[in-house]
Every structure is written in C-alpha cells, then in structure tokens.
Image (tube, rainbow, N blue to C red; front, side, top):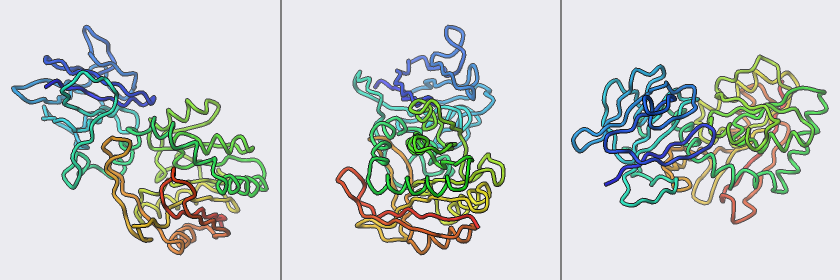
Length: 345
C-alpha cells in the first residue's frame, strides 16, 4: 500500500508527499545530495532525518540533527518504527515542522490526514500537555483562520465588549496591549482598528504564520502564555479570549500570574472562557480528539464564574465586570460563555 507524509509547515502551508520505497530524506538542504523533502524551517537541520523501509516496516532515523526528532511526542535515539497515524515533530517544538504518516490506497492528493484511532493509546497519549496543544493547533491553523476566527469578532455582544475594553484601556494613556493566545490574529487586528497598539503571542507557530499573513502590520511572536517574553509592568492591558480553554486550574493560575506580572497597576485584563454546555457542567472537562477531520488531543475545561473570579483575584486583579451569554447562532459551539474584566491591583 502506498504511504504518504502530510506535512504542516510553520508558514501555514500543508503538503502531502509520497514516501518512495527507497526512503524519504527531510531537511533544509535540497536534493540530489540533500533532502528529498525540503523545508525552510531554521530548526530543521540541512539533512535532518530519514524515513526508510526495513522489511515491511517504516523506520524514522534522526541523522544527528541539532534539535532532534520525535515520534508521538517521544524523542528518538535510534531507528524507530513509525506507523500510519503516527505524528512526527521534526526540529524544535516551537519552530520545527509537524508531520503525519498515512497509508493510502489511492492517488488522492488532498492535503488532509485521516484521523487515527482515539482513546488512551493514541499517538498523543504520552505527549507533554503543551506539545499536545501546540501540535493540535499547528495542524488546524489554516482551517481555523479561514472558517472560525473572523466570525468571533462579528458577534454583537463581542463587538460591544471590545469597544468597552478599548475605552477602559485608552483612558490609561498610550501603551502596549497584549493579545495572549492570539491565534490567527483576528482580535489583534480588530483592536488595532479600534485604536490600540497590540502585541500578539501564541504557542503555535502555524497560528502566528496565519496572523502575520492576515494582519501584516501586526506584531506577533511565538511564545507560551506560561512564560511571557515581556518585561514586568510593560503592558497597559491584556486580552485573552479562550486561550485558557485547554488549561487545568494549575496552568490557569500560572497564565493569570504571568499576565498580572506584565500588566502594570491599574491595567485592564479581558479574559474569555466557557462556563458550561448542554452536556458539560461547570468544572467538567471535555476531550476533543478530532477537529476538521484531523487527529488532535485537546482537553477543554469548563469553569464556573465564581471559580474564574477567584482565580483572577488570586493573581492580583479586581473583577469589575462580567458579560455572560448563551450561544446565539447554529454556527457556534452550544456553550455558555463569559467575558470577565479585571483591573490590576
């Protein structure tokens, strides 16, 4: 059976290439003396790794690269078996590339991988939680940017909330506002058009690539909200819409503490989260293992308003407003959601 490799590049591109029977070399150095699949990613070595046939099996072998290769989140030390559905991280987690091996019985070249089996034994099971989030959003970045993002800023309550947030922030004078977990930059773009100076941060490089593509004047950087590359007290405000959806209570506390560190006294923090859904009570968790037809691994946490308020207060914010609303159209998830505004003490 023919085998393909689906590659998600950090610029948002998705490529599907046939793996030849004599193997596929991946790197930054082009053939004939280098890689047969070439990437521009600086975290990938000139001749990084090889997928080769050994008997009836495929093996991935790292060729002494600087940043290593991972199969299903595990760093490999020698030739390692890979199967259809396995996810490969080639190069550094933040700037390498994500790929998935796929057996196919046809010559269909649509760049979309079949979703492997789900459950505790999926290819994501042993991954670090941050790598799960990064890889999942890398994989869906292009579809997310084209099908979901813009709709979020067209909804009437959200648009009014953004206007109120802008008024609160601008009353503090000039300064930088952070968009934490900015995704494809839709919120940063909208708030820039309303007069704020924005700086977007996201852990997914594919999302950052989409942001730079859709909002070229914007400032965007790949980074984790658990470790913001920002000096203490340098922002006058921050917005974080659904960026903590996949964080448990411990990770949310770390994220809020980082925002508190970088927002100056009196600054404004707008935090959006899910409260509940028809089959999800506040405090419950839902596991998402397929999205847009791709295998992902994302735990979504539903948080009670009282819990979220206590978390912001513990991080050093005084909660001054909440907007709670029900789903308003069939095109959005049927979740009850909250937008909470905190003032930095």
